[in-house]
Image 1 (cartoon, helix red, strand yellow):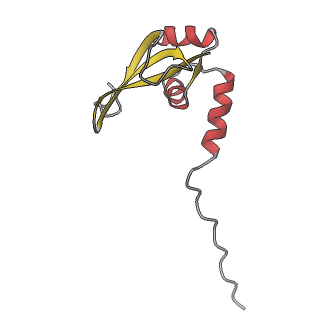
Image 2: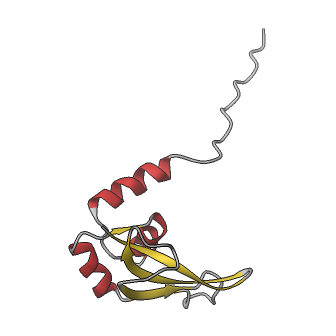
Image 3: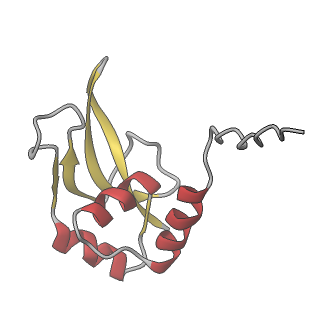
Length: 110
């Protein structure tokens, strides 16, 4: 199975990622099929993401599955993501790692 995920580059506290189409069994920074763009989370506003959206959509059409981070970024850039990934994003956004405490009931005056 082909997945779209990031390879990490950069140095400590200065990450830089390349978007790659790779085999699911390959290690994170291992061999890739094709590089599709880059993501610089610490870069200046407006120059943080550069994806080749035509090639990303090509891989989606062939059945490639994006990681959650890749799916979020593609969605934010206006690209279409596979239905299975959209469902996973919807479920993931509803579940919080740190749930908010339940609202306390006001004490009744009596």
